[in-house]
Amino acid sequence: MTSALLYSMAGLALFAIGFFGVVVASHVMRKILALNVMGVGIFMFLIALAKRNPLVVDPLPHALVLTGIVIAVAGTALALNLMVRIHHIDQSSQEQSK
Image: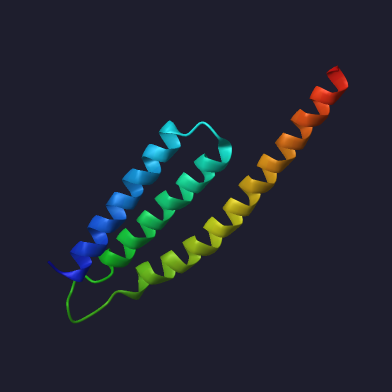
């Protein structure tokens, strides 16, 4: 078993676990974390694809993964911020209705 195949299988497994979490989880925080797990699975799969030829490693998937990590961190921060704001709006509307 080569390292590229191992990374590919691990990436696909992480993607499947994350997808299961998105479908099954009811809390928004768990859905956000499951989306992050899916992203890590995709990143691992892309890194595994970079080494198709044993002598030469393609640098393009590495650059895509680095860019994807930055975008994933920003997206996670935005999602968490929106989750907190929605929670505060729900709490204030419940207090006004009392």
